[in-house]
Image 1 (cartoon, one colour):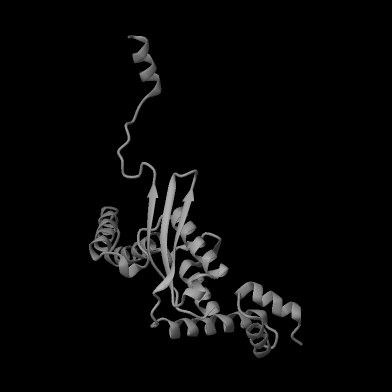
Image 2 (cartoon, helix red, strand yellow):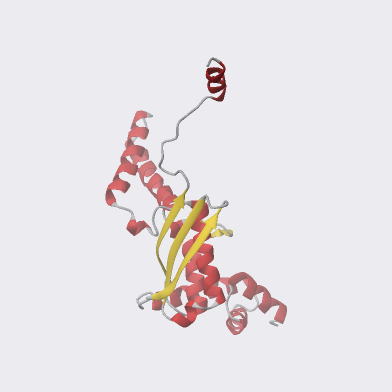
Length: 215
């Protein structure tokens, strides 16, 4: 028997609607894990259907952190102005801006990474492995493995979501598309950090004090 408590638990775990949760549990004969997988599969199917639809509405979200030391602007697009005004959509945009502030990605997705950057990452890994005397077959595995690690660190959609590290930002995005029912895309972002890129003068406090006492 499918109880209201079971439906509530599945809803909290997946974010799916009450009727969708009840249907998934019924099909899974009350097996919570199978029901979760069913919800995920249906969500991915919805995402695939929505992917080709134009998303030209949305929001530009701003987030300031650390008393003004880090600032982020992120553009998140959806299909309609109605969805852009909803609390859930605004919260999602806020979460993405916070993700950018906390995890400092360089690109939205791996397709955005210039080929010369990928080639340089691979070349660096290959050179290090060769210097360590690794065999050729191991070197190639290391090169591909390091490239995948780079994508997961540098690309926003592949990073673990800061509020739930069990899922990636892409998985969070997929969940929102499935739940809201519109195509949603993270188009671009800009991240600013005070002093970033400026070469700071290294100083020795003891030497500065000693120099002042000699004057």
